[in-house]
Image 1 (spheres, rainbow, N blue to C red):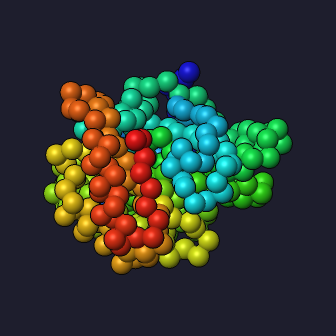
Image 2: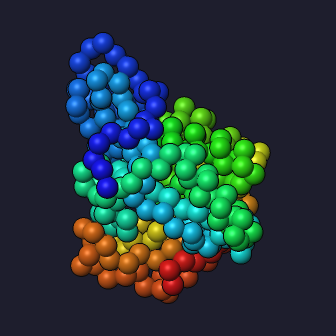
Length: 297
Ligand code: SF4
């Protein structure tokens, strides 16, 4: 593992002659002085340019069943080459992937993997197993390094494979518009339908709702949504009713996964969500949506 700057980092970030630069990738709008790193720990001011520090730096790589993303209604039974880097612009106390999502370049081991290297791996995996048909950007928040998603996705399509994105969706519209046309299937977290819940984790509900609308408007992108039910955070029938009704207002055929929380990170001492609660809230959602699945039960 190396802590030096990746050879693959592109010069695509915001630039300024002044000392302080605002990152425009997500609603946080971090203002970074030279050497500064954003709240996501994945973008930094390097010599007057906002750079994606995780570009070409992979912390996790695995071939997963597509259902694990989770995607329930897109290419079922297939496999996906899944990769993640480090960093996330949200800081949910219950994060299951906090070891990489809350780390920066010095906080977790990584190895270099250019878009070309990832595509070569995916093509080889597809040649060995024809059920391996896609590449997923997942594990941490991929869109804080959207340039890597874009560059890899273009090559993945050229190789005849598909792109899957697993995201919290809390980025500016301009980022979604860059990436969405390249994505074949997306799973977006909708953590809550309450502004205050998003504020508590450093996010913005409006941005997430906008992302869901934009992905759903892409003619070639299959959309699923996940809501992790965390006791005491988003576990009421009223909230699930409101959340599912909002998704249905976009498209009642959007798939919703209602999933069970297990203790993690800063909520290690909590108890898991009761299975009966997950089933009950899924039934509440079914009053609005055609395709509701439960997960982790
Ligand atoms: S992407 Fe990262 S650096 Fe940019 S505004 Fe969001 S948290 Fe800040």
